[in-house]
Image (spheres, rainbow, N blue to C red):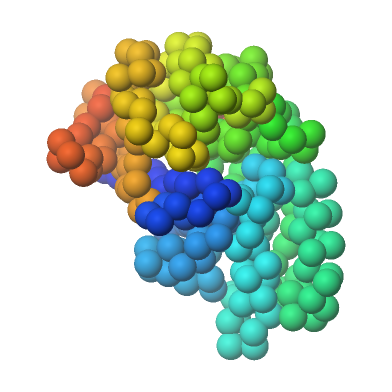
Length: 289
């Protein structure tokens, strides 16, 4: 088997600090290209731990503008403004126009310190429903039920491996099509059923989404204190293999000899695990950026 896609949950926590979890960020490696999905505080340090220098990071994708998903963007722009941090090509940042506008306003408050210029970084607005190629992956988007400008993402590699990362969301029908039968789904489950607001998922609403989407493996992140004691592996049903990753958990999406996908990870309790899915036709109808 050959690794075609690797996903590392850099940060699995929430806006309220937790001692062993940073806020949301996920690293996606596709061959020699690297993509950061969301950039909560601690993301840049975790990238360094993964051996990804800021001069080598290829792209950043943001699901929405809340600070637990974007707080490390200003330090990233600051670092790219330092004369010794020179890139061979600009870093591409993809997000909704509203998220990019908020980021530009925050960066403007620090003047030239956070204005690295177009030779270092380029900003690409995207609307839900649009598609493009990012890091050799076919990126598909839709809305999420969280903020008015939220963008949910799915990434398919040409070999057919797929990962869905919708960001924060409540129950939302358009996600069913976007995330259907993805090999790995990285998704939130914020609060218990009797505490969950409309714009986040609880065990019951996530269980319904998983029944509709049927991903091969689900990585549940973004759990507030009230949910940390829950046994989500058993609460979320049998429509997917549920994992509850720690920070820096690695999932490898492999090409199986039968043409399907094998998702492997190392569980801290049960040890190395592998889950297999049937071969599905890859999404190829994505225009170039």
